[in-house]
Length: 170
Image (cartoon, rainbow, N blue to C red; front, side, top):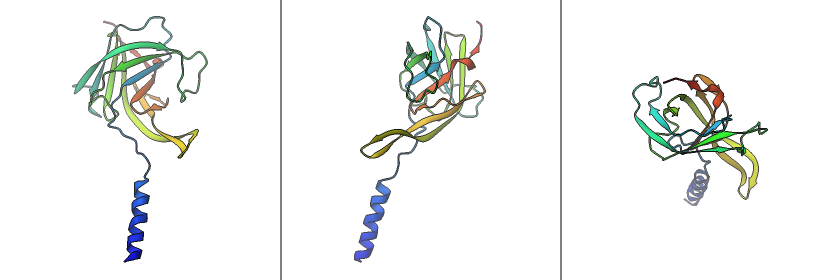
C-alpha cells in the first residue's frame, strides 16, 4: 500500500510540472506591420475574423483598430534590426480575433492583409531564469496574402511584413 501511495505522489508531481502549451484561443491585442517606412500613420483600420478555410467570405466578427503608432524599436525576435521600422496597431480584445481564425486587416480602406495558416510553437530563448531557460509560445509562421511569412512574435500578437500588402483602390 505504501508503494502505491509513493507512486501516486510521484506521478502527481510529474504531471503537475507539465510544460505550458500554445493557446490558439488567446485574443490578439497587437499587430505589428514590419517595414512601414511611410512618414504618416494611417487614420483608421479594421480587423475582420473568418472561419478557417472559408476563403475570406462572410466575416464572423470585426473590431476597429484603436490606435496606430510608428516604432523603430525591434523586438527580441527580429533578426534584421538595421533601419527597423514598423507600424503598431492596437486592438480592443475580442473573443473572435484570435489565432484560431483567419483574419483580414484593412488599413485606410486600401491596404489589405489576409492572414491565414497561423502556426504556434514553443521556443527557448537564451535567457535563463531561476526555473531554467525561458520558453515562450510564439506565432512561428503564417501566410499573408498567400505568401509564407516567418517572423516570430509572442502569442497574442501578430507580426507581418508590409511587402506582402495588397493594395485596392477605391
